[in-house]
Amino acid sequence: MSDIETFDVVIIGGGPAGATAATDLARRGRSVLLLDKAGRIKPCGGAIPPRLIQEFDIPDHLLVAKVTSARMVSPSSRHVDMPIDGGFVGMVDREFYDEWLRERAAGAGATRRTGTFERIERGDDGVSQVLYQPRNAPRDARPERVRARAVIGADGALSQVARQSKIPGADRVPYVFAYHEIIRSPRAADFDPARCDVYYNGAMSPDFYSWIFPHGDITSVGTGSAHKGFSLRGAVGALREVTGLDGQETIRREGAPIPLRPLKKWDNDRDLVLAGDAAGVVAPASGEGIFYAMTGGRLAADATDEFLATGDARALASARKRFMRTHGSVFWILGIMQDYWYSTDKRRERFVTICRDPDVQQLTWDAYMNKELVRARPLAHARIFWKNVAHLTGLVPA
Image 1: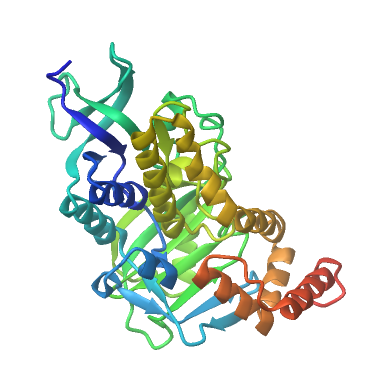
Image 2: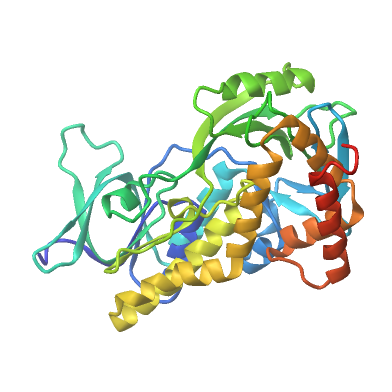
């Protein structure tokens, strides 16, 4: 047993959640192994709010664009512009952003390895052993193994760590499958490199939305849907054609499932906790995940550090409790919004119309930038409530 390398924590998955957890734990003096499967770039709009930039010390050079407005486009091609008053949303390219986070973790003292997770076993002493296949290992090679006093599963949607650990609901996670094409940004006069365009159109996504998000010299054009058989590539092709982007060079294509509901339990009551997409922390309606992944990674690190210090497995449950206490109500509201407003084109038309309202725009940006429900303007909330009622009952035209 002494011949097997031992770590305080093995983190499976090197995306924003795993890399953040690795950095935090390494800075606290824990021995950390960060195991990442190389060669994959997650399809992602790449938006990060100011709160993330501040809380996680993201340097300005990682921002490939600074967005100052959003354009919401209805099924009938009507649009509403939503400017950000005095602020911006940062845009990152996940190919370089994720690698920078992993390098930061290594700089903090974490050990980085590239390989494919296979399974977790228990040694004779009851300590977890993580088995993985190193990158470029021969096909018939025996997997490497390391001992882990604690494990963080940050291996994304449809997490194998969660499934093998029999975390409740891990095999029934509802998700949207996202697909985007990274293209060369156009130099046309009608293309705004500081504006995100969001399309609510059943032909391009029957239950989610489509997008055009600028990343400086490149642009993400994508869509998502939970409907099996829906042609995501065809929908993106149609979006590029209708927006005049079909002639732009395509640099790469990517697709992946995105979970839209947090699991009801993130730990195994023993020595393992989930973070990021593996825990289901992607916001419904918006599909935003980077902030929530990094927040979940930090909370998983806190919970794991407490577990290592006390030996009390109950500490692992604090990651989910703290996350849901702060963000659970936002996820609940966004889930209701997605289920209702994204269900038909008639409702999508009304949804875009609502976005014209100054109160809606102000509170939307306040909530997005600060990542919490805004309670400082009760009269505005009351006005929005009654305006929503009017739209829901058809008292105002779409």
